[in-house]
Length: 454
Ligand SMILES: *[C@@H]1O[C@H](CO)[C@@H](O)[C@H](O)[C@H]1NC(C)=O
Ligand SMILES: *[C@@H]1O[C@H](CO)[C@@H](O)[C@H](O)[C@H]1NC(C)=O
Image (tube, rainbow, N blue to C red):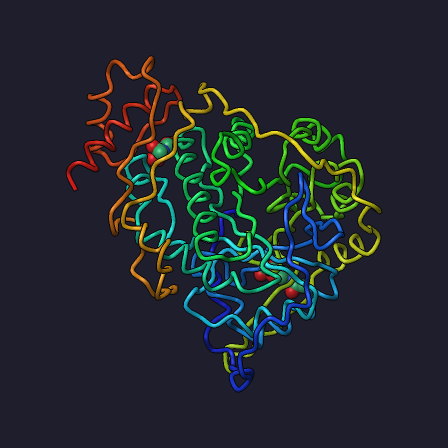
């Protein structure tokens, strides 16, 4: 997401007018979405994500918007008016009961894409040490508990196993960890006999290595580890623009052989007045052979001003007023003018997994190997994740026990200078700003030392 900041407007002061409504199950009116070839399908119909990001208050002081039923009811009415079929939520409270909120969405024809991580329960990409350390059983328990909470809803469209974890050239070393989380989530769903809810990564548009990311998350023989889709955040269409000026034509070409669905997990550049010409392009056959739609960033206006609505709180009564902005109306018009293509949109029924990208100056991952699931998480496969800790938990970054295995690196490059570099990294707890593969190796050395000391 784009530098979320907190407005702290949407507080607990809202009157719980729906508190007396009994929780109900999602009534299953919506057909579950599944992956076929490089497309999503709901039954026999190709499914395009026509959606938006929804996290009132931003992510920094995240609250679960599905548990604020009064606000949700109002917002869902606006989603319907706008004409979206999907929302993305970045942070939920996995200990809450989501029956009523998910049913409100289902009744409005809306699916959920959900980040399985929260700020406190996530991979900590600060250094390779923290990346490795944070891939631990306490973290996975929380991810699995989120799956437990949401797997039962038919309108649960997809889980993101990570969001913009790789955001610079020097943290591509996180990729094997993200991919390991994708694998663990898919294995967990299978072990629990849940529906096969698609799992994939939401990438930041790091120009230097976004393509390597796409390949890496789709490569290798382990089907569980390969993403069910690949999503990325793309702010390259800034009005006035078009299919060519934005460079979207080149991306369609670049990903034409990608075997699983691709969609934009965020879009909506706000540099100039937004005309939403993206919508016509995204849902045209120029793009639908490769893309399955996308998510507008974002519903509420936060400090970075990408919103479609303003929410203001009356200081005395705590009452929240929602005002539709010009962007809302312009987007509504764009959706209304843009049906999905007829037929199947030119999707590809079968493709072959990608080849793992070689390491280079912009991509530090030397091998396709992934860290083993932390041993402490094995028990969840058999007996379930157990109690969800919700947003009140202590966090997982330095909790539990990490994976016992390191990311393997090729022998050819594993010589020279590693120990010295490793010590540096260990002492400073942060730090390498260069992109040559041997620097990564040295940090993996540091991880080994770190893990050994535990
Ligand atoms: C990448 O470089 C930045 C400084 O530019 C540093 O703060 C960060 O810790 C580095 N990331 C890793 C994984 O070492
Ligand atoms: C919406 O909120 C932004 C940021 O506070 C403000 O600049 C803008 O004027 C507001 N627009 C309306 C129509 O209230």
